[in-house]
Length: 154
Image 1 (tube, rainbow, N blue to C red):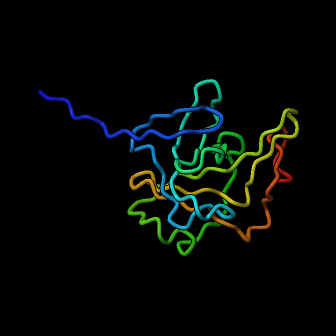
Image 2 (tube, rainbow, N blue to C red; image 1 turned 30 degrees about the vertical axis):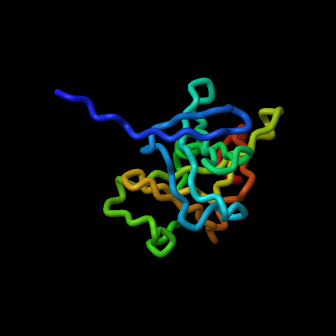
């Protein structure tokens, strides 16, 4: 039985240097990320020492990357109002294909690490197509502290 070679992609990142990942780990943002529309492809990379955080590293711009997190790991009641219209373009066939993440702003002071719950990143994990939503949902804000207790200020 012959093995199928997995297609790889190599790129350079300012923090991690030369990176080689499976092509299947490349996420396409057809419209870019708000504020970074020119960059459309990112490597979705789990770094063992950083769990539960995941890196979203630009394939084409070495200095561009984001830290993302599954918000349900911290806020199990997180339930943003994401409409079918918001999800257009992701080509979802099933809700099971949808993964929702939030962008995290790191800080040397752990109490100052925040998550953007108002702008979730939605990824069709089957097609690896993504879009960052800008929600009108007033229950959430863009700088929710990860270290806070309770959910009164989501």
